[in-house]
Image (cartoon, rainbow, N blue to C red; front, side, top):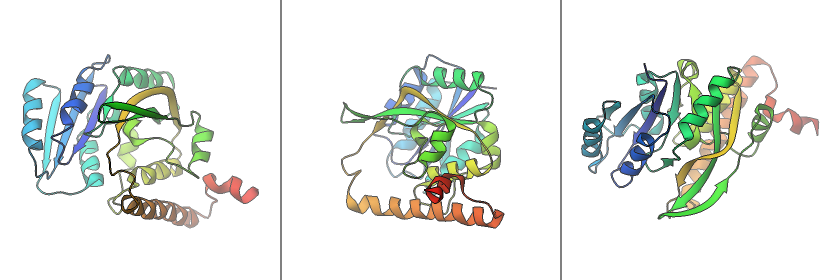
Length: 247
């Protein structure tokens, strides 16, 4: 069995998927499998995936019969994963060559930590942009839920056991990564982030339009609302809001 399963959902990804897959194959840590799932693309994504599968026996490809959405596709990928650790990479992003090595070394050395991420760098049209920095320690990460998704999904690596108990919500069309982390925290899983930049996150020209922001804002609200509802059923106070109540 591979140590790491790298999971990549693909939807109309033909333009960028070559770079994503190449960045995985170029990793300094090589004990991995790559699982790619075409989510009902209308371009030639599937033909690209078939090409990759012929290139390397570690590459497995899946195909949804129709466009099922990011959460369904990530969940399907996670169910297929055989590795001890699960890492995600979106089809238009890229890994730095030592990402898997650094994250595997950290999880091996810290058996108490279940989910990790890192800093990442934005890029657009071949140009590097700003570095997004995140909190490193579990306590600070939990506190950071108040204003951000504190483990960036493009950098996420998790122990397989987390996905045995939690999957991405198919009720949300975005912010599913935030919802996943909130439920992981409710179940007592421990977080950390690496200080290194491990991943290049592609910024598209229309990424920050007001029309694009509204669904994200709505789904972020729903993720927190669902979190509150689950906490109320347990008659306990959400940890991430304790300090707000005490101020």
